[in-house]
Image (tube, rainbow, N blue to C red; front, side):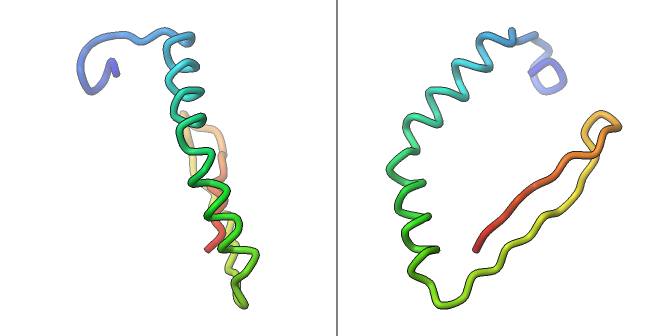
Length: 62
């Protein structure tokens, strides 16, 4: 937020936003998982990237 809009955002505000978004996506997540389980072919990938100089991972199933 600071880099994009010049304002700070608290850790609590961010945690609340993540929680609200996750709650709203529960049904979508279940549908995606169900589709993956039924698929005859599944691709899974783990890609590394750096965040603030530290190694992090993005996990994908498709």
